[in-house]
Length: 101
Image (tube, rainbow, N blue to C red):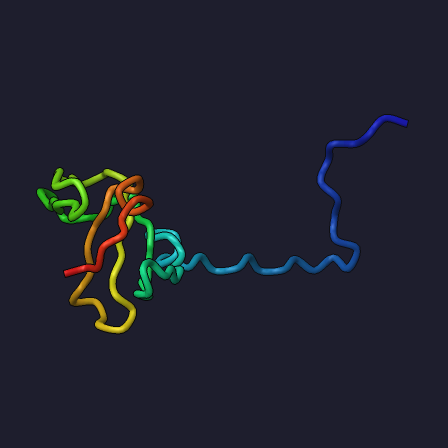
C-alpha cells in the first residue's frame, strides 16, 4: 500500500494551541557558557539584523568593523557582567584566547 502524505488528524478532535514564539530566542541565539583560559564567558550569537541603523562594532580580535546585518557572536565575562560585553566575528570568537578587557 502506498504511503499517504496527508497530515494525520487528531483523534480527540481538539486542536492544541501552538506554543508562543519567544522573540528573545528568535532574535538572538541561545545563551551558552564557555570557559577560555580559566575565564567563564556567556556567549550569544546574533544575526545583527535588528540593530539600530548605522550601528557598528569593532571586533576586539581582528579590529575590523562589524556592521548591521552581519551575523556575529556577543560574549561577556560571566563574573564581571554585561559591562565587558564585546562583539566578535564568529571565526574570531573561535580563535579568541585572551581575556576581555
